[in-house]
Image (cartoon, rainbow, N blue to C red):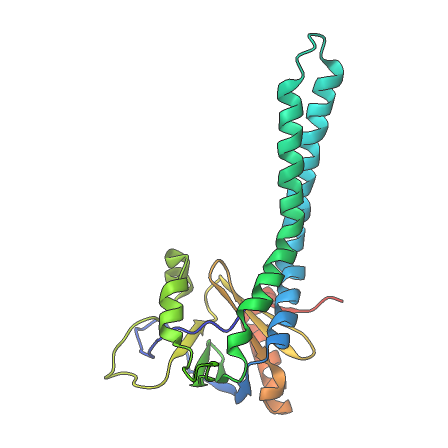
Length: 238
């Protein structure tokens, strides 16, 4: 949502049988507003439809309890009333969840301001390197490795998505980096006029500004990855 970094290395484990091609490479400074804009796009594509579906189910549950009260002949309506109250409470929470998530995200990403990343987009993967950790108010820097260790979730999804997360100094001894393998069915990219939103399902979201790359690089990324990823490379539907 979010530029969450993992300490990772590059290694060849025989997963790719094609020639690796660098399509674009550039640096960019983390901008909380860009991250929020990217997360809004993510919510539009993936979250709101699910929330609407859940709210419909809640509405149906409420309707069924209302019918139960209307058709009741015993006068015992306590249980349907309790269930209606529970459903209303659940519905309100579901409706507010996307907005609360955005609010919490806005508070949580301020520490990323000024952090500089380098993104390399290949025909089979995306590599995001932490070039510079911006200092905090007390002069310290964000420890991206510790952040990653404290926030990692969905380890099975990480493995399935094949995000490298090993430590082998003989292979790679560079700054903290994330490698997202685009041949995984869990990896998707949303393209807007200004951003690439890379979504690894159940794991993480990465927002990369397109102005980090030259125009011909952006064109190469769009043409190549749309052909390779198919429907997993999506344009923003306005």
